[in-house]
Length: 508
Image 1 (spheres, one colour):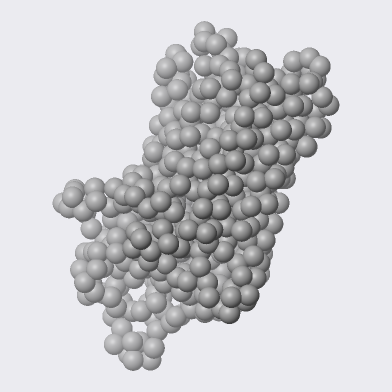
Image 2 (cartoon, rainbow, N blue to C red):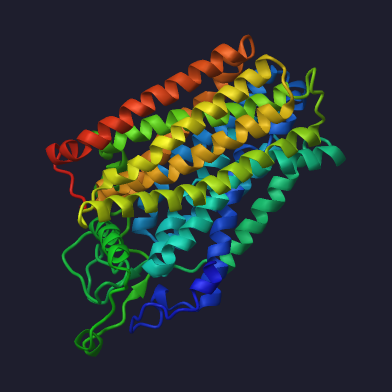
């Protein structure tokens, strides 16, 4: 899909070093590397799902404490991104990726050779913190490099690898533990992370382009023009978000005019400013995602989706602790294979949800004579509430009444991950459209809240569910669908007024 799309002419820029002028081969290799590294980071958080009893035995803790390590890894993934975004905006994309992975890779050795449970958890947290660079910075690299026509396909591939990372971990883990002892999960993680480091060093170039004659805060972020002055790096990234939206709307790429080419002076790649010389500027940039919390149309749907996502993390933690018990008696490899249901549901949901949401928006645009508003997209989220309720109810009732595994895995997990994946795309796009100029920061807030809620899930969901699965999952279904319906209807009918009252710029 991406390869065929790149056969078209790339955006023209007179400077041959500009990232949009990279060869198609280099772009594809870079995209594969960014996607693989993103998969690697999320894989790490779930790498020990199939080894809870062994971890509990070796570190002399309860199985519940062993399961909590999943949440610790997710916490690292969520908090680290708040640091890597401003680093990538100041000293460069490639440098941020290498610094993040320079922390992640050594921490895999820390995890593998930890002598105590506390040390093991600390290693997992910092491994996630370093690996979180792959959760946000690649989106900026892709935006720097790919034209709007191809950017959507590139982002879809990268985000797909983010999705399947934690779900593929128990599959790999089950295979490893069938042949080796559980510590080999960590040795495999070392090898995968080492490969990621090599690929990053050799296949991901610097893509932050600074225009000639610009101040330290100026740069071209997508080549809509050849010279831009008087703006900070943060303002330029915000301008890029707006330009990307406008380019996607008209379906074309803005290129240099003949007069601009005639007066062109080549720019440079790399550092925009030195954070240690301008600490206030750096801290202000780092605070932007948190400041986005003041906008109701961004914060409320982000919190609601975070709850939905937390239930999915609960599913992944509950299954390996329950399916080996009567009446299922699943082996480790069988438990691992169950996660294919989540992968299939999530992949289908990602693409089906995207096409359905785009079709829904187009329908309302045509019906209303061409006018466009971000709230149109939320109509596509309403049917997902049915899948959310269905998945949670079948999952919980299947365990509680000891039904056949297919009811739990195929009937429960698969549709829930379908809805979870579809809602992720729909709601992230909605919050981006609500405040296009701050899209990067809105998405960073979305991911931060998601990871905070997901961090808490392993600490309470299993102990809540085990005494009474039916009660726990009926409650989850009621909370998710009830609050979701109220929030979506409120945004559909009052979202535009709320955005207007809070002076939020958006197209439509």
